[in-house]
Amino acid sequence: MQSYFISLLTIVLFSTSISLAQKRELHGREEAHGELKHHRLSVIWGHAYVPKAFSNPDKPQTLIIPTIGLDYEYFFSHKFAIGLSNELELSNYVVETRHHTEEVEREYAYVGAILAMYEVSHLLIIGIGPGIEIEKNHNFFVGKITVEREFPIMGEGGWDVTPVLSYELKSSHGHGIYDAFTFGIGIGKRF
Image (cartoon, rainbow, N blue to C red; front, side, top):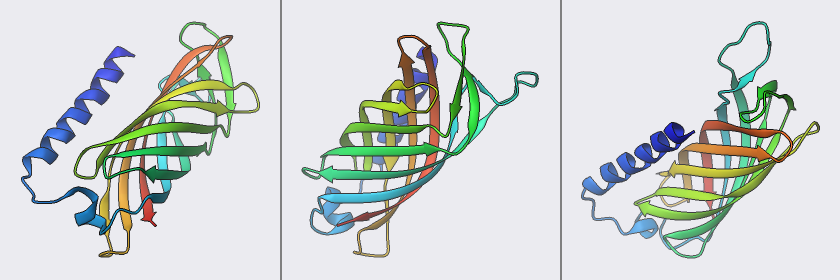
């Protein structure tokens, strides 16, 4: 798990240094979107990689799970926001938890989280916060970290395309721990 966290942190720091090195004369969101628009809604299509997941115990293989999400963010300023992340996994699979050798079945799990968000450089945003994975067999508590970079489109209309990378650590008292990495592309609108 430490190597996954270190990898994610390295990506964040590398992305930040690239953005800072670009020497643009931009002034945060005002340049990209005009005046500050407090609300942002986005639809995200993605794929999750769950290292301990499998669909057939006789044939272990890498399992990539399709996801769809709907995120809402409220910006207090150009730098700080709070976000509500909603994601639905569009697959059934079995996961082996870390601290137990138990296998837990997952069927179309919903993952929701409340994130504190901060813009570390121009339109590069990190978020972190708690959440829950709800599923009919067993629910898990979630710790979530996200990194997203907005690319404004269509002039001043407030539309953007946003690649999103997230890491989720999922734990349950009776069923151990497992984690997931998700990469998605979002289409967002500020209003």
